[in-house]
Image (cartoon, rainbow, N blue to C red; front, side):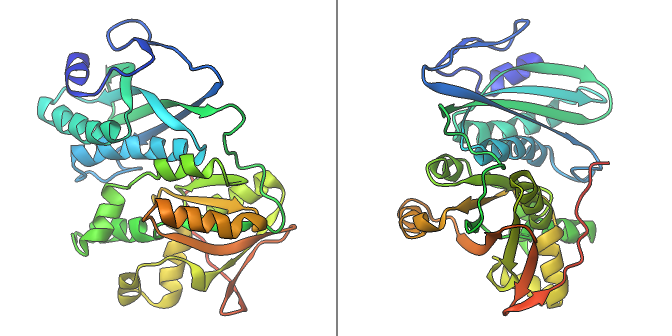
Length: 309
């Protein structure tokens, strides 16, 4: 299995001194850079459905970690993959590696180590990346008056999961959003020059924005009518249901970040020149209390956010 991974996956890049096949990996860090490390795991039944295809699983474990790297404003460089499988199914492994490799290659990410064991189906991945010294973005620096933004559309992956659980495979854009999320790596690196704080949206906007504001000891005020929700969701749910899914549904892997008010115009202009990715200004950081408004009125939400335990 290790040989298959080494042969099929990108495993060498600039700075790699020792890669797959030894007791450890060795990389060289550029001067003036800092190392960022992220790690995530996925298990059958908790993070993906039994019918999920191996290429989707391979793509998703890399997307999840790349999204964390994006949220730090770092450039991904090296990955360590750990696979626990009940049996060494060659066809499953080949499709898994193909799904992982396509996304890894897209971001010049080399798989330089890891582990394989026989056991319950579980995949773990750790990515190391680089960011210029003191330019990483954390959750802890949002300030009162900062503007809150999100990338892409929200709630689409949760709706995709809902459709799959019903045995449906359309509308396809929602299934795609759940099975093959697109991490915002380039956007995250760009934001390292602008954002005061940032988090990726994995557990739902409400839960993740709350984590960010708690870490920064501030609150937020978000306008529901500014949330980027695909119109098709309102064709399947009433407005309150669609809004609840958007705020509480996980697996979006979009970025939520804050920008100082004084940088707004210049930031938005540069963003629109550089990216086609949708950008939505959804609210503002407040001194303490958090809440939502819809057409100017207070809006109470019912949250059902994902909890690991």
